[in-house]
Image (cartoon, rainbow, N blue to C red; front, side):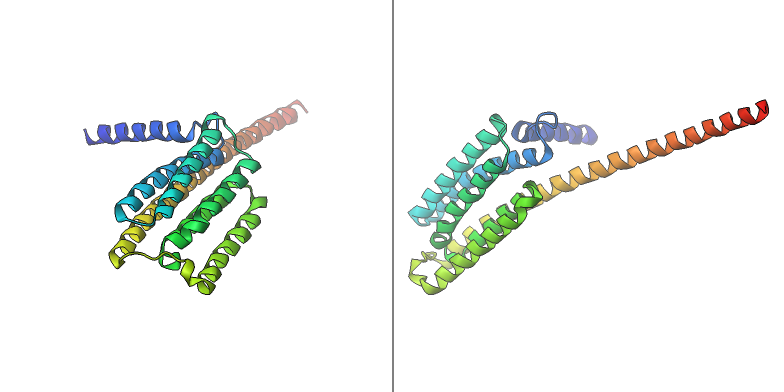
Length: 231
């Protein structure tokens, strides 16, 4: 009964994953991860907007959450429904995240808030998804953006909208960190799973090639023995 329940749950999880990310036949692995990332970020934006309202955070932070939700849902629509996954989409996604998270940094307690963790999380996902030739660009721009907002916080501390209480800050931090851990773990687990599958495929192909090689050697030996007998 337990094995049956686990198999049923696994099948349901695969169906859900394919519904959100797409199937292997229609989408590349990186495309599926981008679809999944866009969807999960949209869910987080909705969740973050709700929690920010409950926690009583600044109205701008709530509006930025709504903007993030609209943007990620639109990205999901382009990527999953319209099947668009190219350099333009990746750069658009990259710029939009900076446009949302940059201002959010100052309305979520600046360096005392969790915004930088969210920026690092999104950068990690982009580096895993994007072509290697775009990695340096993403890293440099994100690193420069983080340094820029930290310097702005230092020189213009009055720009920062702090938390009303320590409890509010800890609650916001906890929610964001739990989400960051979940998202990062999910993306890396999927990549590891794909890597393990590729390794298994390579090992299987290697065994098949070795078997064919040994079979060819045996045939060559047999042919050589026949030739010797004829001579």
